[in-house]
Image 1 (tube, helix red, strand yellow):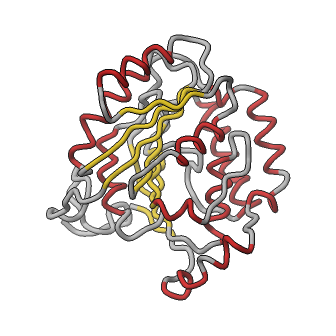
Image 2: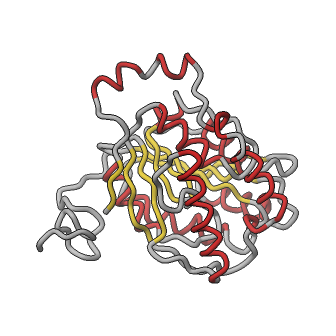
Length: 276
């Protein structure tokens, strides 16, 4: 099959990676921040458990209970009792998405760190693409092939991504798309400081400053089955804009962060953006 703009490697449509000899040689830590997802979390965890044997030798699944007010905690306890790979981290009260993600990252033990939302809106078969490209990139970031959302949410998302690109120079589609794989070493250098929904923006702002290699990969996205998204909460939106108004804080890299990666910069080009 010939290469094209949408298919630069000439990959067979529906085939998750361009090499047929791809082998599962990596160990993966999976993080699911969960806030009031009692109707989705079980299906999400069970689905990723079916997908992981195809992409990893060993894995762990860390569900961060973000101070839920529904029965999410009870479902998480059932999952932990059923699956030995599942671990639960509990926040006594809702401290936000950033705090949940940071708690999960600090608890991981494997070479690759994958995080996604616990609402089951992604196709975990796409994880194979991310694992494959992680061999050559520090971060592999999914972007939604088609947003299964109302028009107003798609317009809001487009405006937000354009604003982030203009303010911070981060050239990513769907920067908040919760389907990403990181090498563990990324978080030896990137420091999560923000407390709101800007965690993805902060990570990529610092990664850009540090010259890390990033690959963008198209992933499938489904309509939400149950519950409601917290991203539409007016307080979340206001806090995000407040943090974006301080771009120097989002991309701030401390001397010890930069010094530890100087040799890395001499061995690889500056930030590389490519897209399937």
